[in-house]
Amino acid sequence: MFHDTGIMLGDYITRTVYTSQLRDSKMKIGNLRRRIGV
Image (cartoon, rainbow, N blue to C red; front, side, top):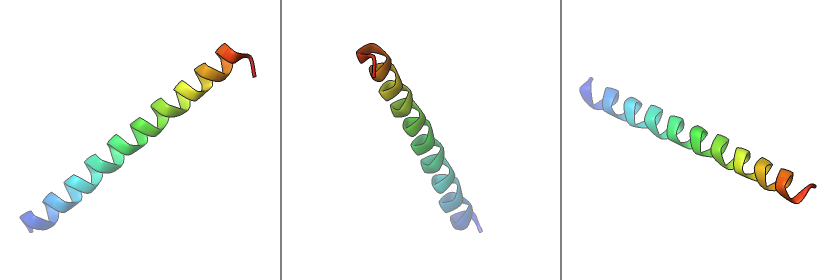
């Protein structure tokens, strides 16, 4: 029970970190495009 919860928690944290990093990189790419003027 606890083991499964730990796996689920780790999976949730990984997914949250991944999506936030993805959002950050999309914003950075958007800022670069704006700066270049594409």
